[in-house]
Image: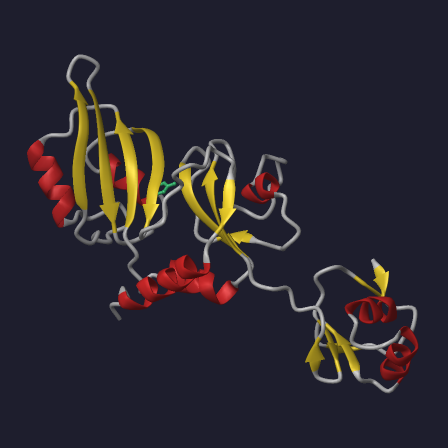
Length: 243
Ligand code: URA
């Protein structure tokens, strides 16, 4: 924690002495509260406004990560398990856009842009997501058709039309691998869609979110999104808006 006037001076908007004067005049606020006390210390990331202007606005960053197995999409965990924030270790205060389960790997966007995150995960936006799914059983043709048409999950909600592409059927081991493209992102949706037919998901990897992949990234690796990718994702979210 640093003294407020020092943080203001370091941001380059004014000198430390001028910052103190502005504080005394009630022209400085921290997280919405006017601060006149010169000994006041601020936490990093606090919102500081000097004469109506935010001085320390963190610039927006957008990453795509190949989420590793055994990591949580939460900001912190009471059992000290690894989170995707720990995996990233960047200076910006990023958070995951949506959730993948503890054991799921693959495409995960990390950002500090809340508005963008809401656009991507809002239920009324339908960005296609493709998962590579490994199940313990033989996925029969009539079951595939049923899944593609839409099934009613345990909470009574019917899934939107989906696409299944079988990539392997191992009759001796009774295992099926397939790509599944869904338009929604309900809680544990893929696992629940498989449970509907009595299958257990052995492995789950998100291959694609819209056009975005983790090609070239190993588990735990990440890269900055390119400006055109951010633009395209925003456009896709808007195009996919059904209601
Ligand atoms: N569906 C699931 O069941 N789990 C995930 O992690 C993602 C989609």
